[in-house]
Image (cartoon, rainbow, N blue to C red):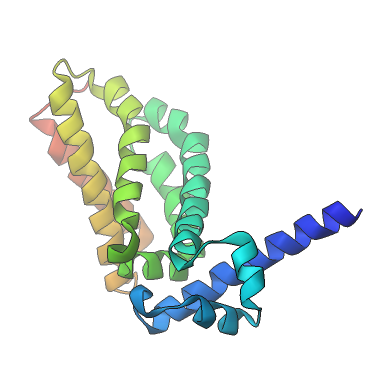
Length: 195
């Protein structure tokens, strides 16, 4: 029973530290945030912080890893449906719901991207998961072209998300999904025929 309580308490502490870091990143640059800032925001002592993290960089990496892990599970849950459907809609709809539910986290991580390379990690995840889709839909004979396409689409999707946030998500979700599909179709039209 004590171990279960300790595990629950440790999870709670890590969650509070991550929430505190996000709150601070809304107000100041990551490079200006100290461990003391985080612990003061979380109303915790520094000893508790160091039980879980070696510093603010590791805390930020953990926060990003959690988000990317959730995102990867979501992609995995809808990837086959996307491949079967022949459009990005079955994946984009739940993905945008996920992004909207955690809008503040995404916005802060995109804004503080220079501190961690969050967009780069996101791009690598999209490329990794998109490789099967490109193979299924197009059977590219020159793998280099498939790699270029994946890179282009991954950065394009990240750019769409960033712009959507920059414009306070004014574009309705449905129009964003349609635009993403049109852009993906346009990018592939002259490169690979649909199989």
